[in-house]
Amino acid sequence: MKIQMVDLKGQYEKIKKEVDAGIQDCIDNTAFINGPAVKEFQQDFEKYLNVKHVIPCANGTDALQIAMMALDLKPGDEVICPAFTYVATAEVIGLLGLKPIMVDVDENTFDIELNGLEKYITPNTKAIVPVHLYGQSADMEKILEFAEKHNLFVIEDNAQAMGSDYTFSDGKVVKAGTMGHIGCTSFFPSKNLGCYGDGGALMTNDDDLALKIRMIANHGQQKKYYHKVLGCNSRLDTIQAAVLKVKLKHLDEYSEARNKMADYYDENLTGISEIQVPKRAHNSTHVFHQYTLRVKNGKRDELQKYLGEKNIPSMIYYPLPLYRQEAFQQYVEEGFSLPVTEQLCTEVISLPVHTEFDKEISDFIISEIKNFFN
Image 1: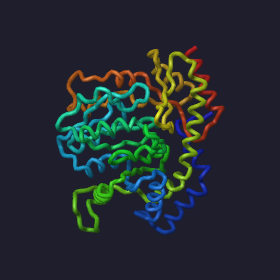
Image 2: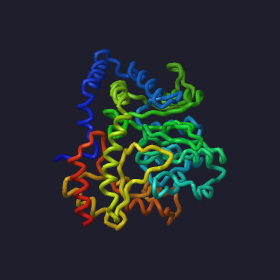
Image 3: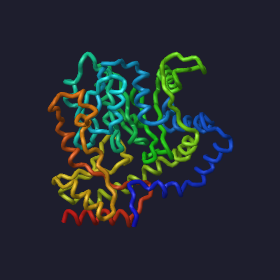
Image 4: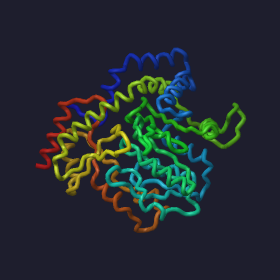
């Protein structure tokens, strides 16, 4: 049997008629840039997220960069971000001449750890970037309280938890990516809401920020050929918007399917003492962008090799802390280390989880993991 980390082909075959019609409409109308599908998807997405403004852009990394530009962060300003995440989160901070302040994460949720964060605050600290890693929201209520106390901007990196619901202590339920000053997401094909190329978006409830974000993403212009600020060229392709418009209608259904597969893994792997199945936060739903185990006996790499020999794909997100990457050495002192991040980088391994749940494939993966540990 052929097993994939994400079954995009199987997903496409179920929505082929709708997707093909949307793409064909773009071609028939030659509306390749800023065509009607872009505005239609934007409006549908705003309604789904219950957010005032969605500004589509070219990719998730652009979204993060545009967000920081829109907040007028200046070279030398410090931005707090987790050390255990994808490079893009910290990469754009450095590219803009800002300083990434990398902090540890919670060992259970993998999201930014707020305990002890006070020690990182300096007069130059201007923003914090919580990453909703693997599919569930960081503890945004506490993050927002922390940010308000220290007068920080909050930029949510929601590339991995689109569709996740966060519940505040007063019972209010909101979508991940809509709670900070600006939320950012990616529509990379393997994301929970993915297109068939590159794509991204920013979300905000602030009218003035939305206006500025739109200008920055469009060469700094509000009126064509009149440029108010220095910007960039970052827009969502019309064909990709047509794809996303169709897939958005199925996003909650996709989340349910991912949870079904995750539940099945949990049920069958929980009894293995050498591994820890994913912990689920009490105040956030999980959409399982990744189903990530922790292998606690030092045999993570051996497990991955064994699974590979059985033609079972797996991924390690992430094998190296950001502060150990060569690109970030200028931002950290020699010997800098964060204990939970160091541990997770040696323990985590993600298994296939996607919208096309197949019991036979799941049983095979589970049986081989059990065989490895027996």
